[in-house]
Structure formats: C-alpha cells, structure tokens
Amino acid sequence: MKTFKWTLMLSIGLASCGLDMPKETQSSFETMTIKKSDIELPYKFSARMKGQNDVTVIPQVSGQLMKICVTEGQQVKRGQTLFIIDSRNAQLELEAAQANLQAALAQENSAKLEYESNKNLFDKKIVSSYMLNNSENQYKQAKASVAQARASVNRAKVNLGFCTIKATTPGVIGEIPVRVGDQVSPMTELTILSGNTTMYAEFSVTEAVVESMVKEGVKADDVDDYIAKLPDATFVMKNGTEYPHKGRVVSITGVVNSETGSLTSKVSFPNPDGHLYSGIQGTVVMPFAEKGVIVVPQFAVVRLQDKAQVYKVKADSTATAVEVTTQETGNGKDFIVTSGLNEGDQIVTLGANNVTEGMKVLFPNEK
Image: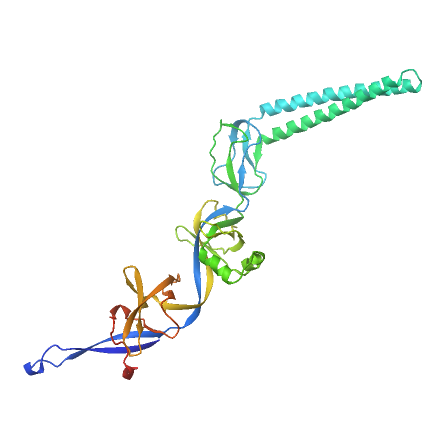
C-alpha cells in the first residue's frame, strides 16, 4: 500500500490588493492494488444445546405420586431414585399373585401324585390306559398353571419396582411439572433427564456452506471425511461468554430443507464441569477458509444509502466511483468484495470519504 499526496490551491486574496499569496492545503490518500488472497471467516450459527442422552422420564404404572426425590437442575447419578408412586395396589397384586402361585403348586403336586399312582396301577394292569392318559394330561395342565402363576408373580414384582422411578443415566434434572399428590400414568411426563457429560449444539447450516460443499464436490459417501476435516467449533453464550471447551462437528444431515435450503448439523461439546444445560441457546462459531477472494479495508468502502462503492483510480490518476457488493469477514476490519472489482484495479483506501468523482488522487512526481 502506497501513500500519495494531492494539493489544492486556495485563493484567499489578490496580490494587487496587498493580501497574502495563495496558500496550500494538503491532504493524504492511500491506495491499494487489488489482488486475490485466502482468508478465514468465522461463520456463525444460532444453536440450541441438547444432552447426548436426553431421557424423558415417564411412569410405567398409574398411581398417586407420593414423593419427588430430586429438584430441578440437580445433578444425579445412574440408579438414583427420582420419584416414588403409591405402591400399595402393586404390593397387593404381588401378594395375590404369590397366593395363586402357591395354589397352583399345590394343584401340581396333587396332579403329580395322581399321575404317578395311575402309572403304577397301569403297570399292574389295574387301571386302563384312558385313566393313565387323563391323569397325565391333568398333571401337564397343572404344571402349565404353575408357570402362568409364576409369570404373574414376576410381572407383579416388575410393576412394584416401577413404583420407584430411578435415573437410567447420569445427568441433570430438567423442569418438573408435577407435584406430590398428582395422579400420574404412562401418559404423564415427569421430567427430562439430560445426560450432560457430552452436549450437542444443533443448528442449521447456511446455504453458503452448502454451496461450499457442492463446490468441493462433497458427495453423500464423502460426508464423514468432510466432517473429519472441519475445524474445531466454539460456543458463545447469549451473554457473549465463550465456552472454554472446543467442539467437533459429528453429523450433517444428507437432506437439504427445501424451504430454507439448509442442512441440520450437530457439534459435540465436552461438558466436564456441567456448565452446559439442555435448552440453552447461543451461537456456534466455526472458521471456514475462503480461497481466492478480494479483501479490502472497511474504510475503503463508502456507504450511500443502500449502496456501497469504492473509488477506483483511472489511468489519468483521477478517481471514479464503482458500485460493489460486499460480505462481512467477522473481524471488524475488512470486507470481502464479491462483485465490482477485479485483480489489478487500484482503489483509494484511507481518505475515501473525502474523494469526489473525477478528483485527481495520484501525483506521479510525488510518488
């Protein structure tokens, strides 16, 4: 980048009137010659956090909620008791099933004795084969009844166990919309248990990234390799705080949303300190390399209402306004010019706001 000076002569009086001779006021412009370069852009995506193993806690049996053993936001361990449902009916069902099992066992024992007795008598040719076969069938039926009764006992034990609801995974307790005394059923959502050792930030990948994937020739079979080469991601909270641990892209859906032209993506973030929770919103920031683009300082671009322009230096060293389209770089200093300029063009940078159409901005003898 070079600095050139221009001179403006101001007549402030006439020599014949005895006034001072014209004075010179100097001002400086800087120019640059356009060339393409590579730049890394921080792409930003609005995202929502979700636990790796978010579990909706729903009772398996109906009954009155007797006790809530946890509080919202509490960190729990696998197997820790969360809720207790009235177990009296389940206990009665278990006792009834156990009684039925005992009766079935007694009936089985009687049928067995009858069968063995008839078998001995049949061997001695005292009873007919009909009686033997009939007693054998009764014995088999009794054994089947025992098996059925035993299954009922096991089912009753399972239902009794369902009255105590435990955590199936370590995590954080979400909102608890129920209260002690509520009647709950398998249709009642008690809470959400967020397995938060690893968190996923879910977001929509913009059309620009989709186009970038297309340009690179990424096919469905190549997505995993493409993901592996992506840079680490950063999560920024709504208050502007940057989460200290970096994340990695773990999935990109293979179907583009026809309405938005976007893909859904997931970034996995480690959560060793439990600072991330399901449902929190923020911004995923990922650096993407843009190759062969025109980058100019922001102060070289003059805004006129809804238009943007730069001053291009012509061969006669005068400036002419050229309308351009720009793209943010995210660094607060530069723009990417997507149209209006070509490599080799020379434009005014510092002082562009002071330039007017046709003004001479270069003085060869002052280079």
